[in-house]
Length: 76
Ligand SMILES: [Zn+2]
Image (cartoon, rainbow, N blue to C red; front, top):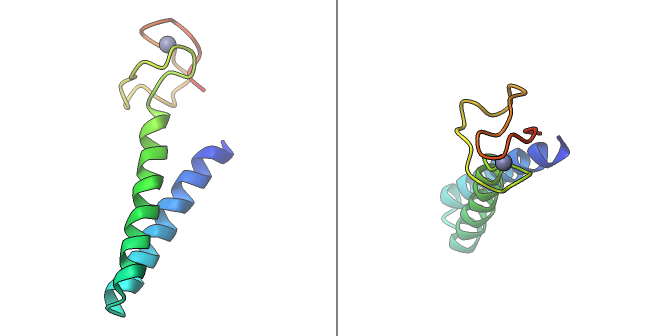
């Protein structure tokens, strides 16, 4: 659960920093913000994999307490 919050926080913080960098025309800040937001996105994408077998799981099935269609394992 905390992992999800961390990913969202990174995404929000990265977007905010990137936005600030854009407003201030501060290129390093802009790049940093984009990088952090991208990391947050990667962390989010990682959620949509089965924690048991690592295969991709349809996002609309995720988080409803369903089983992995590949291995039948519990989805976190
Ligand atoms: Zn699985």
